[in-house]
Each structure stands twice: as structure tokens, then as C-alpha cells.
Length: 214
Image 1 (cartoon, rainbow, N blue to C red):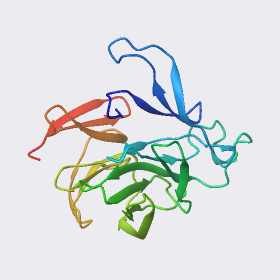
Image 2 (cartoon, rainbow, N blue to C red):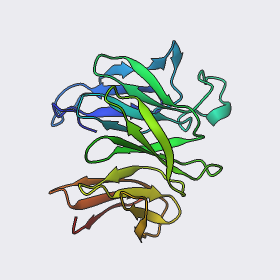
Image 3 (spheres, helix red, strand yellow):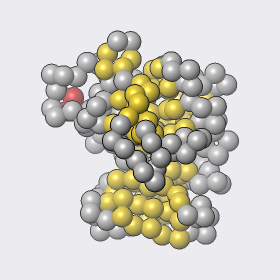
């Protein structure tokens, strides 16, 4: 994602950290500044997805997909797959530790609800959490019963979830399934671009886009 200054922020699987790309996007250089690499002295598993709050905090997920041996990798240091908050002053807080594979993450238009898609086949849920003013969470609830990879939210609060087997699920702010954008390949992520009404979708070997009326 891009920060407020247009700099690229990455969830780096192999380096197990959140980092910022140094240099201009028009002339990038392969140098990175680590923003967060550990929690309570232990390295992250492999940060996967992230979203930026208007207060400057980054919320991100940390499943074990970037570790060669997954959850059983001997290099793994954390005993859970967490959802974390990186505040603008660099402090890292653990928000969620009861999801098997937290993956996609997004915020409601008012930025008072945090959505997290779990991609573990053993726990097929998309969760919603209310955000307190201090950035902590409350009112944990299942938003929709399905697993998911990446997700994004439109300006009306509809949630678009990349469901690996079916395509992109479109869910209302109340968690009602409005429809599915299907494709022929395993779907991994979604985001809005261009004028804000074009949805971009990544699949196994495709980069897709579709114009919406939202």
C-alpha cells in the first residue's frame, strides 16, 4: 500500500517484517527501511497483508505462509498467527491471536470497523471488530462464513473478499452476500484503482480489472 506521502509500504514475507521502499516510485531502488520486524523480541512469522488507518497506524496480518515449513518451520518464533497494530510511533500491539491463518484485512469507510479474512480451511470465517479510539478492538464477531484471501471495501461499506475457490465475494455492510464475481482461476486479492470504481483482481496467472457502478 501507499502511505500518506505516496511511499510504498510492503508486507515482506521472506524478511518477516513490515518495511518501506526507499526512493521515488518512478526510480525505485532495492533498499528498504524496516518499520516493524518483531513482537516482544520475537520475529514475525511472515506479514501478509496490511491497511493504513487515517491516524497513521498500520494494521497487518501475520500467517506463516512465508516460512518454508509453514507453521512447523523451526525458524518460527511466535506461537500464534496474529493480527497486529503498528502505531505511528513504532509501537506494536497484538490485537487478535485466535485465527488459524489471518490474511486479508481492511477498514470500513468510517474506519471504525476492522475486517479480517481467515484463509485456513479449518476456520472459514471473515471477522469484524469494532475499533476503539485508542486503536484497540472490541465486539469480535463473525461477519460472514467463508474463508478468504485479500479484501477491500468500497465507499458504501460493501466488502469485496477474494475467495480462493469461487472468485470475489461481494458482501453488504451487514454481512449479506450480494453476489460473486467469478473467474476461472484461484483468486488471491482485490483492490480499487483508477477513478475509484475499477476493481483490480489478482488470480493465479491473471491480473484482472472490472468496472463497477460503485
